[in-house]
Amino acid sequence: MTSEPTPRVGVLLTIRFLTELALLGGLALAGTQLGAGVALSIIDAVLLPVAAAAIWGLFIAPRARRRLPEPGRFLVEFALFAGTGVVLALVGWVVAGVALAVIGIGVAALTRRFAKDS
Image 1 (cartoon, rainbow, N blue to C red):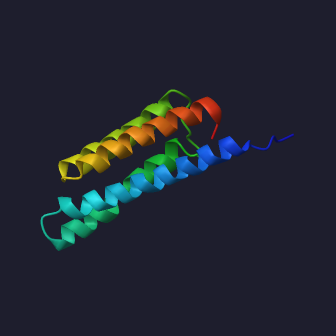
Image 2 (image 1 turned 90 degrees about the horizontal axis):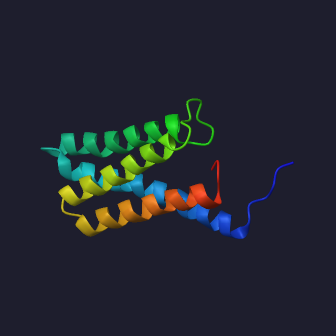
């Protein structure tokens, strides 16, 4: 028997999904600023979010074949959000970087508290 998530858990999971999208968008934005020239900027803007999505899909996603057990899964998620925050800060988007890191890590922690195995 599968239990339906409560409305609060549904909202939390929606916010979690939005933070995941923000993580990918932040990496793409930072990538546009990292390359020396247009071609390298485009490559960075594509490769950074693709690498993060691959890591997420391999180790964090609910249906990942190699899904890490906790707390390893949280630590990888923490590293992705913190790393994205640092990269955004390095390219001049300090407030966005700090906000993304704090909100992303906070939502990741809340998910583990209220929506286990999500």
